[in-house]
Each structure stands twice: as C-alpha cells, then as structure tokens.
Image (cartoon, rainbow, N blue to C red; front, top):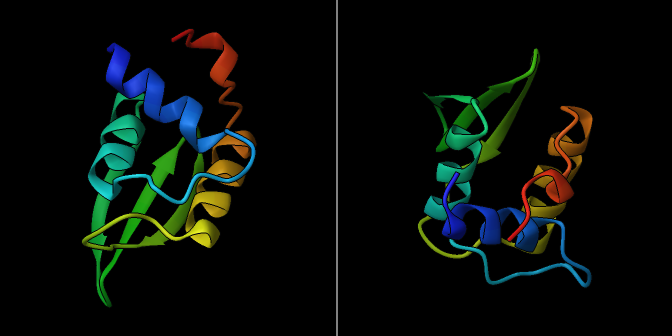
Length: 87
C-alpha cells in the first residue's frame, strides 16, 4: 500500500468525519486491503473483505458523510486498523 492509499485510509477513520473523500481513491484502498469489488445493479458495488460483504452506492464525486461512516464501520468489522498502516 503506497503513501496515498495509507493517507486515504487514515482519512476514512479521521474525526470529525471527512466528507471530502474521493470515491475512486476509497475503492483503490479497499482493493489494496484485499477486497473483492463487484458491480451490482442500481448503481451499487459489492465489497467482500475478510469474509464480510457489504454494498455501497457508486457515486461520481466525493462520498457523503453517511457513506464514509458505513465504510468505516465495515472496515472495523473486518479487523482493519489504520494504525497498522502508518502514513
């Protein structure tokens, strides 16, 4: 995982919630963590990581806060700790 990916990962877990995250950058971080990404109907993507699966809305701009919170909770459920990836 390169510096840009680690920086995005830390932004997902930042407080207060970051609402300026690029959708594509977040998808690349998920892929670097080993997630399988599949396109689903209704403008959504399915993400499978460490045996957990979730669907996120595919947006063409920055992620809304609610989506960032959902991604953060999903990564916590999968056992991802941003401290394991120092910036």
